[in-house]
Image (cartoon, helix red, strand yellow):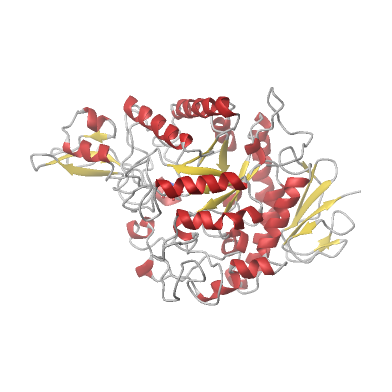
Length: 552
Ligand code: NOJ
């Protein structure tokens, strides 16, 4: 990976650097990356074809969104078989080719594993439906009798994250309404009961299945989930999860037992490291209330990384950014763990749009800020994740017609929440019209979500040819990260800066500054920057711009 040795870099007893501590991983949302078959849905062969592009960009690895057999009620986060490939995306032979090709290029491969819930089509859930109350098959999930005289009220008052009650009632073998089962997302995603030893053992098997096939690790979905309060009591604020779209119900998430699972999974990874020296990586989707709580998930014997979402949630405001960065450095990096930064993913409005202001639409402000945020993120100590299309500066597609929207949140909130389709529109690769090279063949081929005409300006071939593009900014930033010992792992030192500007030093002499305002300010370092997110004359830091300098 990185061929440098920064002074503060952590090494193990054998003087080996832990590659993941400052890795940059690219999230591939498989169905929207590149389609090799012409059915309008991206696939694993498409990912393999795109590997040279990702290598050129300079990322250390890729995280593949779920490609397992699934009825696709939540785009694969409803897994019917954890050890196979859905024919939509290819097959195991194609998967092996992808891993082999990635390995030859030196690109790590992470899979997305979904342990909180499965699909209602999973054979164990079907077995549970057919089995009697109190059976072993039901014990793998959360089945409970309802309340009220006929048991026709759910066992507790929890609401699901995507809206509606967190419980659905089943029909028993005798045709009568029977027990209820818990699903913290959609009814098609029943939650596993992690207090059942068979569930624990089954996931051990799944991990080993993929590790044996050569993967370098896993992104763990809902990693603060898995366990629920054992009594399943009523919540004081049952709709809080759906309202905040965050896992805030203290009875349903972040239960202490979950840490035992991460210790167990870590020791499985260590076994593989002992065999061949290659460190496998566990990165958790950890959404918990404080950075201090977050740090508990990345203790030395638990997860290697956990996405620190507070940066992603922070508004474009220097005080907000400084606060979350300082907390992460103190509470997470301060305990010896690495901080894992992220600005975009497949669940969030893209930065270009999020940082734009409606009043200034078309002014390019959102794009300028997104570029500045990218340089800021790549300068922070720790690891970083980039979501596909982020390197192209893709905006959110905000005007998708209702009838193409597939996000279960949209359908489960009575068409109120148009949240996650706009960042999942298939990537533009080339050409002037949809499908922009995403899908082979005629222009009549239809990507699974329609691409707007303006995607032509963002196509990868144009981005590569234009040195002022987002793509070049990311590529240059990644190249500098891999050559400058000041960047990557380590600490940061805040520097005095004019109002509206954040400035910090990495190592002795690398300075990163971001001007959150719109008016230019004096630059914190004289001389020309090494890299800037926009035009940046010596001595000046223009508005909505970030830059890196080496100070003398
Ligand atoms: C988090 C994933 O990122 C999201 O896309 C999914 O819908 C939920 N977990 C449920 O699996």
